[in-house]
Structures are given as C-alpha cells and as structure tokens.
Image (cartoon, rainbow, N blue to C red; front, side):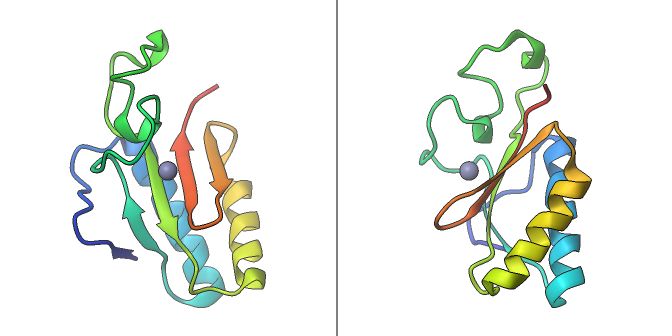
Length: 115
Ligand SMILES: [Zn+2]
C-alpha cells in the first residue's frame, strides 16, 4: 500500500487500522498490489462531523471516550472496474456492519461507525 505524502498514520483508531488492512489484503488478492491511502485525519477538507476527525465535533456520547481518527480515504483508480468490484465484494464480506464503505467518484471512503 502506498501512503500519500502528508498523510500521517499516527493516532488513528485501531479499528480503522484494521479496516485499511482488510482493503489492502483484498487488493493484493485480486491485483497483487495495494491501493493508495490518500487521507486520514490530517486535512481540513472533510465536514466537521466527519469521522476523519474522530468525534471531537459531533458529540456522540458512545464515542466520546476515544476521539482518534476513524475514517480513511483510499484511491483504487489504477484498478479496472471488474477488479474494484471483486475487491469491494471481498471487503464487504469481511468488514461487517460496524464499518461503512462508501464508493465515491474519486475514492473509497471507509469509516468505523459501530451501530
Ligand atoms: Zn473520507
């Protein structure tokens, strides 16, 4: 997995670290290499309620004890649509309901948002 310059992997929640590892492994299964990790909690491009910033701004009680980054953006654009479909299927099968995987136009957004 490549990490975009400026993205810090320090102080992220263990659950999102696990989620990123799952996506990386599924990419390796299908295409033999990982995605690019393009964002964690480092930029101010996300909405204030975003789990990229943990829970500092949204005040949800259940998460107040730990405000580390719980969201990641990954770039899989160098893979074909068929490869991305296979990777997505593998990820959804493994991540379970506490993770939300959102396929955006320019990237994949993953967040740990326990129900
Ligand atoms: Zn995101």
